[in-house]
Image 1 (cartoon, rainbow, N blue to C red):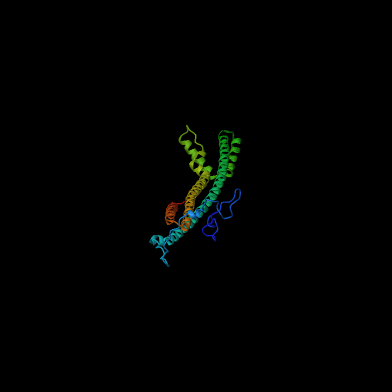
Image 2 (cartoon, helix red, strand yellow):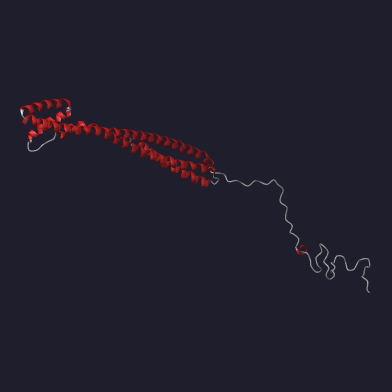
Length: 281
């Protein structure tokens, strides 16, 4: 048997992996015979140049525009103006609502009073109609009855005219007699007199007219109050948009929200001013 050149060096060399026997696993950390680790195939990393020693200069920041720098102050001013206009519109709306309630109450009182006056006047009208019919009957008995009947009719007529005939009805009777004397072919009732009807139903007509005017005034105040309430709602929306513009980081979005809020504020202010300038009863 031939010996290795160097008897001191074992054979086979230790640097070469030994093939394990059949059915025997290779030692831990050793790849099977004929295989190499992936690290042995990877090339050496290229050497990178070391960065220069610090300190390093900070990157240049974009200088904000004058509008962007002062936008916070501008937004605060616009927000204050919108808040003042909101308070003003709300106050005016409450005033108009109070006046509307006052006019509605007055209209209800006047309408009830007018109804009472109408019932009273109508009752007097019916009573005067019955009284005038009785006067006509007594007048005929006085003119065409016998002496005894005529005397009784005359005395009864005197008492009736004194107790039950008002001055308005008495004047209406005189007016009716004059009209009938001018045209005997047609009959004119005393209750057709304009002066008599005005004296009887004039108070009702005046009170009813006042009640209608109060109701119309309430409707005007209600409409103006609704316009101011609409302006208040729009101003509340603008305040919300101003609040969003104050917290959004994007300057373009802040500018857009502030522009929309300002437009809504201008429209709401115009609505409120238009409502205030309307004539009121």
